[in-house]
Length: 292
Image (cartoon, rainbow, N blue to C red; front, side):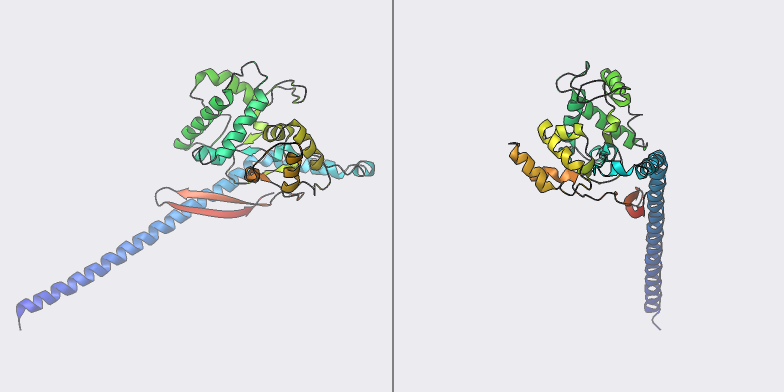
């Protein structure tokens, strides 16, 4: 027997066996890491769901009380056929703007900046360009919260520009008495803007008069208001809004209306997508869960 050939054969068998075992080990490791990443991202998505429910507990209680109160309306009041507008359901969501470059969310950036000007241009602290300076500082502060893995929250933001501290505190807190039409008091920005992991559009049927005046103008917002209070607001369509703008000589790009939802359903969506992400494996998990 050729001893060299025998040894070469043994070495070849050893090499093949080692390679097979090595591939199996790598495959098992990949599967293990993938499973671990999926479980971690799934757990984070579930935690986001639970946090959402906790954060919105008071809102749900108030909504239930409001529903009960509406059900107790007298027959005479119901005959008026006017619906109540709920601006708290039509806040601008700054979340995508906070986690992406403002160039990618230009429409949202411009709308929030313009809204800040609408809300605070009559305040003593307002100066030309204040809306952009403030919004840029807010976005930078959110970036810091993201880097520190903190919950994104307006109340705990630390603005880079210290000179904005007092005005920002007043903007977040607002005053006890506020009337947009009479220019009385200072509104809270939290009544118009929110940060929530969602891509929901702004429901036009509940858009506030401040937001409408910002996006359109006062005359057009008054006409839209008449469509908002219809019960149900079946005539509040994007085409009707465009017609109102055209009638009043207000040029508007139809694509810019993508920020708004023209659905006329009385109830909001009862499902929401929550996202979890495991940075070690780059695995993202999305789960759709019911919300009330």
